[in-house]
Amino acid sequence: MQMNGIETIPTLGWSDDRSFEFCFEGIPKNGVVAVSSVGICNNAAHKRLFVRGFEKAIEVLEPTTVLFFGQILDEVLGTLGTVGTVVHYPHSFDVKFKSIRYGG
Image 1 (tube, rainbow, N blue to C red):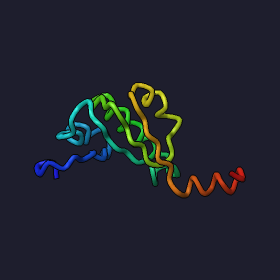
Image 2 (cartoon, one colour; image 1 turned 120 degrees about the horizontal axis):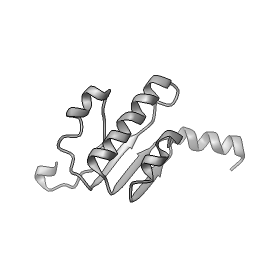
Image 3 (cartoon, rainbow, N blue to C red; image 1 turned 180 degrees about the horizontal axis):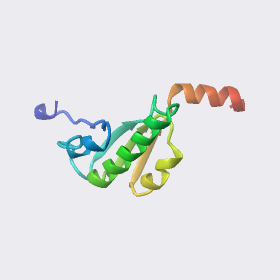
Image 4 (cartoon, rainbow, N blue to C red; image 1 turned 30 degrees about the vertical axis):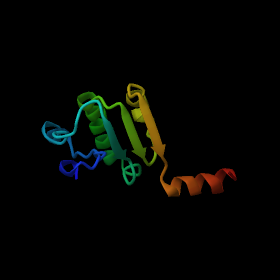
């Protein structure tokens, strides 16, 4: 799409520390990136891998804007504080659950 002049926003992805050597290749520094925490919050090991990879992504890519889909984990708040703009898109389940729980 980029080669045809269509602006894209890369979605970040990684596995464990071994993938850090290549998983951010081709993603421009100082740009806009998207990330999703959907599906990782109920598993401690997945959550740790997410936090570690997210920290590394911010370190390597130094994005100006992060589009964050899903729950923003407490563990990444400090890292997010180094990003200029964070746009949060809560998961529809989280929105519905909070509405039921808190009556909003």
